[in-house]
Every structure is written in C-alpha cells, then in structure tokens.
Length: 107
Length: 362
Image 1: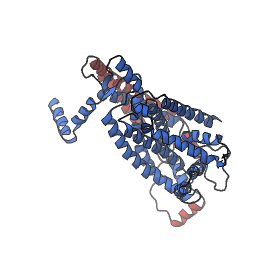
Image 2: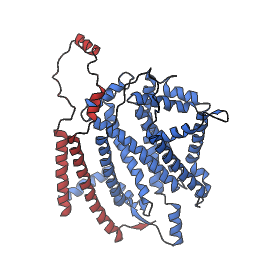
Image 3: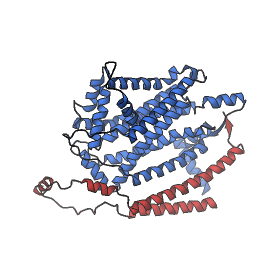
Image 4: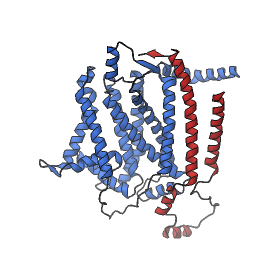
C-alpha cells in the first residue's frame, strides 16, 4: 500500500514537473516571427550592420541563475529523492530475500 | 489481465530474449567486501557516457564547425536555442564529471591491482578508454573557438610537438598546418564528433564483454584474508541488487549534474584576436593541470636537452609503465603482494592531486 501511494505521488510529481518544464517559456526564447519574404538587398544591409551578432552581455544574461531555474531544480531533486526512496524499499526487500538465502551464493 | 501480461511477456521474451539476459544478470555475482564501493564507478561512467551521447548530437544540430561561425553558433546555442544553455552546460559538466570519475576508476583499479591475471586485457582496454576520454574532453574544450580555446589549442598541440622524432609530424597533423587556424578547428571537430566517440564505443564494447566474462576483481588482501580464515567471500547477484544500487547512484549523479549546469552554466570566453599575445598565466583545463605544473617545474635545459622534451619523455615513460602494469608487476601476477607497485600507485595519485591543486590555486 505504501509503495502504491508513493508511486502515485511520484507520478503526480513527474506530471507537475514535466508540465512546469514545458509550459513556461524559456528565459530567452523569442516568439517566432511570421514567415515573410526578405529582399536580398535587405539581408545585405543587415549583414553589413552586424545584426544578429550575439554580444557577450546576452550570453551572460542567458547564464544567469533565475528563480524559475531554481524552482525547476528543486522539482528535479524532489523527483530524484522520491525515486531513490522507492528503489531503496525495493532493495530492502531484495536484501531481506538475500539474507534468507533466497538467491545468495558464495564465490 | 494477468494472462494478457504473461502473453506480452512471453512474446517479448521470444523476440528479445529478455529472460536470457535477466538470467545472465542474476547468475553474475558481485563480491561484497569493504572495497565494493569502487565497483560502482564503471556504471557511473557508462551513465555519463550515455548522457554525452544524447546531448552531443543535439548540440550538433546547432553548432557550425568553421572558424568564422563556431563562436557565434555557440553563442546562439546559449541565447537563442530553447534550453540551449542547459543542454550545453549539461554536456560540459557531464564531460568534466566523466573525466573525474575516470580518474577515480583508474586509481582505484590501479591500487587494488585489478589488472591481475586473467584481467590484463580489461586493464589495457580501460587504459585506452581513459586516454580517449581525456582527448574527448580536450577536443571538446576547443570547439567554441573562443580565446581560451585558441590558447589551449596552441599550448596543447605544442606539447606533442616536443616528442622526439615524430613530434613535428604529430604537430602538423593536429594543426592542419604550421599554425593554429581554421584547419585545426576542423580536425578537432572531426576528432571530437567522429573518430574519438566511435573508437570509445568500440573499445567500450570489448571492455564490457571482458568484465562480464571475468567478473569483478577481488583485492588480493580480501582474498588472502578469506583464505586464512577459511571463509568464502560473500557475493550478491548483479540483478537486482547492484542494478538497483547503480540506479540510485545514477539518479544522484543526474541531480548533481543538473545542479552544476543550472548554478554554474558553461562559460563562453572572448572572441579570438589572432594578433593578441597569449595572456600571462594561461592554463589548460583542470584535467591537464598536473602535466602543466610538472612541465613548469622542469628547468629550460636539463643536461643540455630541452626541458620540455625531458618532461614529456619522462611522463610518457611513466604512462607506459602504468599501461603495461599487468606485464611488469610480476608479483601481482603471481598473486603475491607487490609493495613496489602499491607505492608507485600511491605516489602517482599524490603527484596528480598535489600538482592539480597547485596548478589550480597558484
């Protein structure tokens, strides 16, 4: 029963975690622009002016630790701890069987 | 419902032979003693390698391997690609952790003399993989083609240039010319995404087969103690015990990896200025700091020979002895204690730790 409850909790956490991961827009993602035909001359002007070059500041901004990222990390650790607890329970059962000589052998 | 499950299980078993695989894992025994913890390192390495094999190809979708575009494409991965910063950081930290765990795996197997008969070839394949992992780390470090990468390429390709006789050829082969430039990046890219991972996969397959065939090596001290006490060494089946332990270790490792990636995302240095002189105190990545520090301590000339040549030749000779340990450590091969090789392993570990720390902090 304990294991079933823990499994349900784990699944619920996984669902919440996955939903929060994909629902929130990435910190630096931009809305995709509608498709439009750009004349060649316009491209050349943009290239000449250095448009599209990413500055060091933008890279640093992308590296910043945001609250959203920390929440996500906490969610991930919660999942890991829950999964680890479930596995430990399983291991405890296996160890019990091992001590009872169910599948222990000696080298 | 139960009958359906049995039918599905039967159908899968018939086609994938899952039952045979599980039987094999159940039959495989892992010794349980005070050094059992070191047995987990191989699985951790395998997990990290799998993470690299997933994140690497995704990064390849966006990376543009040319001298003019490499830096900007990495900046785009960091800024424009959704979760690109996370992907690159996970790849970066998984690479660092992989090298760290590889060092732990290497030193632990060296100290417990896991190369004893009949595991000589498992040791040799392990050593080849260790070198491949180091080169993968180094080649990956240079791909952003920023200022740090440029100086790392200059210093790193200069070192094999000091090898007597073949040095000049190796240097030109790695650089694709006399100087570090566009060709160097192409070569390092080809090595990082093609040659080295394929070679690693091939050697890894042989290594895993050998480890499965021979089982885990038991330290000599444990074997002797069991013989003296006329006791048998207890062992647990690989499946489910060790597979579950590996799963927990793997989960914690993934947590640590993502924590590092979020809290310390990988950096991108300044854009290359070919005319700029190398900054003072430029250092290699942490896993080559010990080599850098040793070479720094050697005088410019030793007995009339260039110091760098002496240093690299000396390090190559030490590496050769370690590589050939199963064939030169006769005492261990006869299942006797070999204090000379234990001392050699302890000194190697101390030199590695001390030189890395000094190189890092000073």
